[in-house]
Length: 145
Image (cartoon, rainbow, N blue to C red; front, side):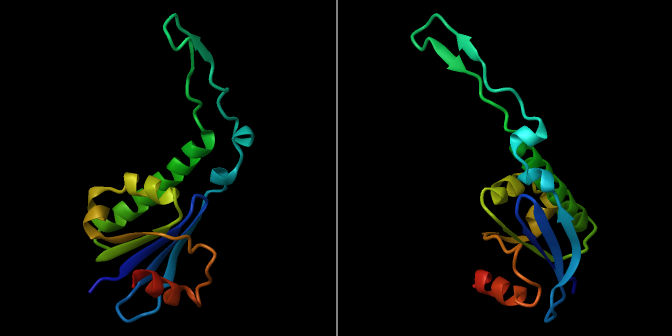
């Protein structure tokens, strides 16, 4: 029987754990993406929206500003989803649980591929990135129940 993978993530940090049946989870990989936490001005964000003048009833409208921080978070979500997808295609795990903070969980769920979706046992809206490895199994069990 293959192990279960557990991804614990937020927009800037992630830990990928592997748990054998009736075993303790071990850390497979730790990933950091500090650019997700930087301010848009530090990232060289886009210019503020510019006014479009129209001759209709609405008069003026503003183009939406592209949030550079959002782009960085989406990039990290894509990176994590790719990691899970490769493991799923290579049949390195039988099941996967994802624990991530909101709204990053939504971004991550959008990026999941077909192999990962097939093996996904649940997506949980909780940030466990600050929980130590010693108490993590109890917290995971609590969230699963």
